[in-house]
Image (cartoon, rainbow, N blue to C red; front, side, top):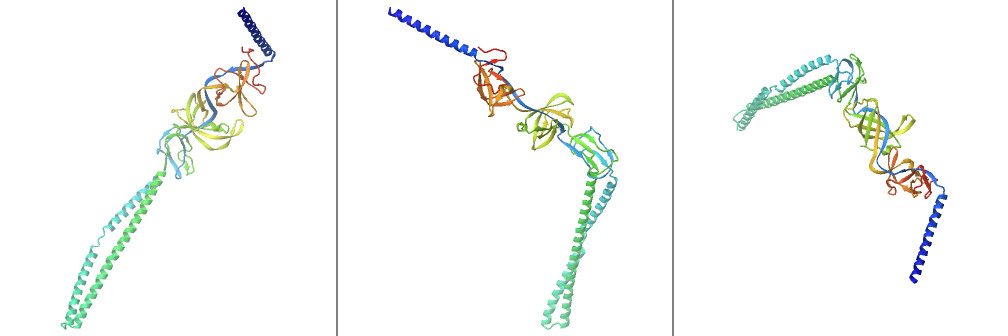
Length: 421
């Protein structure tokens, strides 16, 4: 009997709890139905491969280009190349009249040979006769000296007269003077010969220098190509009178092409040496070519654009492809990939609300309620932007074009008119 009564009590309590739960649910449901829902556009978060790009246009140039001017002045008697001709380094492109300088060179060579022969004669000049004369004078002096010494001894013991002694002394003096004179003649001969040899060598050096100068002038009478390339412009005709300031040819290395462009001061921080660049030119073909950023100018400058003037930085792009049909001065369309990453969380730009403090906020829809997420952004694509924050996941439903009126916890209804159950 007691057990039956307890069972009835538990049943009654269960019914009371069930009624309470149902009442709360009905109350909350009625409250939700009574709360006005805000219609919003929404989309799902996706995982995408993103790349950030900068689009611009630039001018195609040759990596090596030279405007050729002559090293001398005069009349060009022959031009050996035409526009469009391929040339190599050191190739003769045009010539001046060289007949006069050739004649001067020939006569100078003859004069040089004559002077060299004179030098040989001086170097081989014989001084033997002077050397023999010195030897004879030395022998005569030694004999006279010995004779005087002998006479002196004999005079001292009274065997010869004073006159004989004086005669021997006079002979010794004469022999000494003759020896000195002979040596002086030899020294003068050698000094004079050395002077003549020295002067002759200076003369030869001077003539040789003049000859080298004339050969240099002769080389100046030929206009040579300073690089491998193509003659893209010829500025003068044959028989034209030109000088060192006259442009004769423009030669460009069309095998190594560059593109020069200007990047806005707002985008230049994203440009780095080595970044990949896609290049096209409507003037040539629809083909796409690959390049690399090779140089970034160290200073900005003011440039004219379709929208007016802007501050920009010049960059240079080296074309990696070979056999390109691009021509200097054509316009190229440029796409610079500044960053890229695979499999990232991405949302449309219109999903991000920036508050007054500059925070980026994304609102997801969870149980028909807006949930605010402060997020960190990453790579900026054309239509979407990377979300680095872990609070946003693939497939999340996010609100598009949120405003200041979009609040945490507000009831929302998607544009399709559904409240998620």
